Image (cartoon, rainbow, N blue to C red; front, side):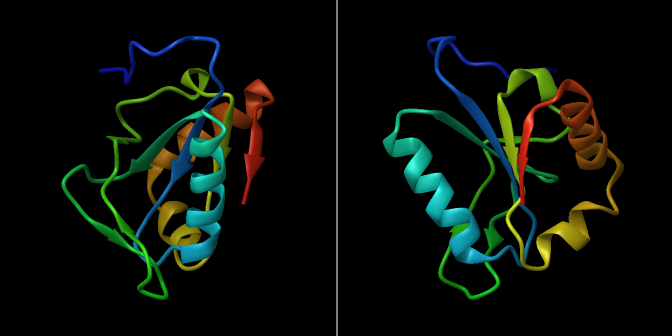
Length: 111
């Protein structure tokens, strides 16, 4: 299943990959700025019904979709907040595949 929306296709679409222990500000600052700029931000996790908590406990969020439901070409950029999340993400094949495909497409990757 591919994640898609009915939103305007001219909007910038940005994926933010999260996992437990992400750096709160490295998620919250870009998320807030992008949503204020009217970009479409999709929070991706490895498990849909989980609430992911930031490393400092200031932010917790449920994903909009999982990394198995999307394709890298659904997005214009991918953000991976720091903290413990990248270490957890890199051991899971699906988000790694998404990031590798995004890199192959030349998408902007921020971490």
